[in-house]
Image 1: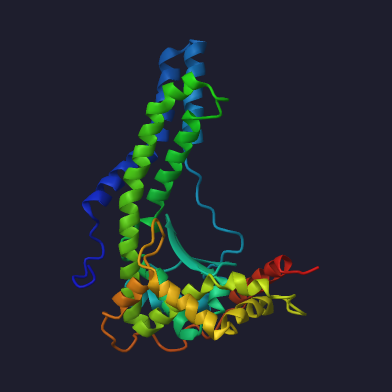
Image 2: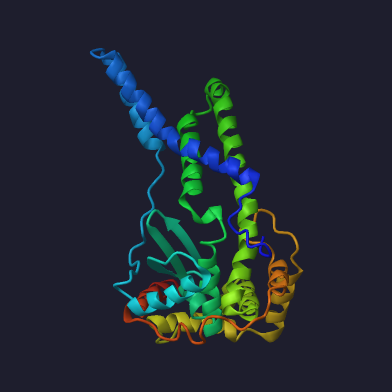
Length: 342
C-alpha cells in the first residue's frame, strides 16, 4: 500500500463492515420511527400510544453518546502559534487541519475525527519526555492517521460498536437468573455478538495496517530515525510505573515541574534495565488483540522508507503558546495529587 500510494483503499471485509456499521447506527432511529408510526396509526387507542412510546424510548436509549470535547480543549484562538505549527505538519502530509488540541496526563497521543472536529490528543508525560525531533515525529504519526484510512479514528465505527453495546444491555438486563428469559433472548444476543465481531475483525486488521502507514508517512516528513527513536521511547514507557515506585515525594515541584520530575525517571533509568526493556520489546513478535503491531516490525518497516532529508524544519515545536503551556501546568498539578506522599 505504501509503495503504490493506495492509502485509502479499504479491504472487502472493511467495506462490508462499513455497510453493517451504517445499518447498526440507524437502527435506533428505525425503532423510534416504528414507535411513532404505531402511535399515530392506532390513535385514539391508549394501548398503541403506550407501546409506541416504549419503542420511542427504547430507540432513544439505543442512540450512542455524542462525543464531547474534554474540558480545557484548546482552539486556534487559544494557541495560534501551536496550531500554525500543526498546520505545517498537516500541509506536509496533505492531511486535514487540526481544530482542537487536548492535553492529557498519558504517556501516549491520539487523533480522532468527530464531524467538523479534528482532535489531536497529546499526553503531557510523553511530550515532555521526548526531544524536539521526536515531538515532530509524534505529531506527524498521529496526523498521518487522518490520510491512511484508519477506521478506528472515525466516529462511524465507534458509534456502531456503542450502539451494539446498548442493544446488548437492552435485550439482556439483569433477569435475576431467569432461565426462560435467557433462552428467549439468546438468538438476539448471538446476533449482536456476530455483528460485533463482523465490525471488530476487519477494523482491527485495517488499524494494524494503518499503524505501519502512519509510521511510513511520518518518516517522510520527520525522518525515519526520529520515528524509530520515538518507538523506543514508547517501549520504555511501560517501565515508568516501576521507576515511579521508587520515587519518594516530589519535593517542592509544582505545575509542569511535576511532569519533568516524573519523566526524569525515564532519562535516569538504569542502563541495564533500559536495555532489557528495549530487548524485550524488540523480541515481541506476536501481539494478540493489541492496538499496535510489535515495535520490531514497525521499526523494520520504517527502515525501508527512503531516508531523504526531513521536509519539516528543525525545532518546529520549540516555541509554545501560553495557553498550551498552561494546560501542562494544570496536568502537573493533577498528577502532584496522585504522587503526594504521607
